[in-house]
Image 1 (cartoon, one colour):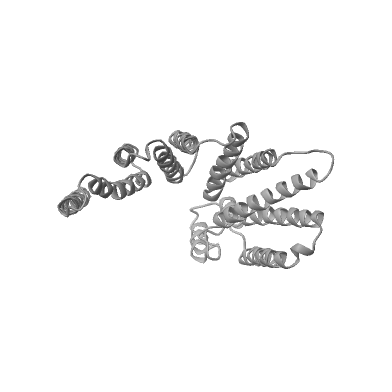
Image 2 (image 1 turned 90 degrees about the vertical axis):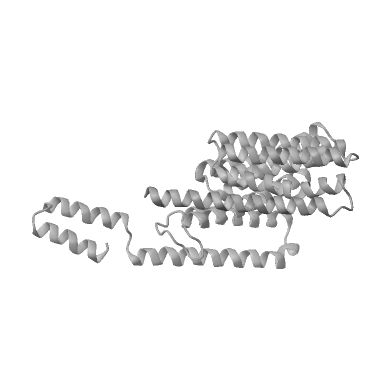
Length: 328
């Protein structure tokens, strides 16, 4: 307990502001809620040692990997994955808000859980490869990829539900895409590029709707992943279908960028605005060049209009800030 707080509650006790029983309860609560410095140091040393062991293990693997039997490689991967999960669980027990170079112990565990996801994927792949060398099963490559992606997705879902941390959100997103892509490739082999673009567009749209309905958090990350995937899917889809018509392609991309900007204003999400703004920055000059090639005036006019809009925006923002100050 902080010395000033301890001195204060002693003063309350001496002046009969609190009873002896309340005083004892406060001391007990603070002792349970705030572990001793020695306890904190012991936990920190343990975690640092664990990270050193992990670093040494990962550094040793490339040197001995080729000399190990396949089953020994699998065992080593299982041990590594187990160790990562243990270290991530252990780091969650830190009460400190700061831990080494990280702002909180949650971020340490999030990174370790992310690495464990990669390691777990390796375990699943190696297990399937060992099974394929026996006469028990005979999976095709596409089926093996689908099975592996399914188990990794289940693991990613579990970690996200359990922690709700940023890196687990990212892992859940990409494992979902990998699983759905593997499933689509198995059902519809040799699909056209436009179909792949439509798949990415649909995935981004669904992710955005889940984020909108507060199923996925934090919202900024959900919208970032959704909007970037929507953009990539749209570009692939439009380019494959109307790529021969540059003007139509540019107009459609500008239209999509405007929708992003409008959506960002409605949802008050800056990340969506950045995606839409980037699309406008890229495609408006393309449109001018396409309509008026070798003419310097349109780009200059666009530059001046942009400058005026920036000035107006800054002016309106300054007015808003002044109104806030006056209101206070």
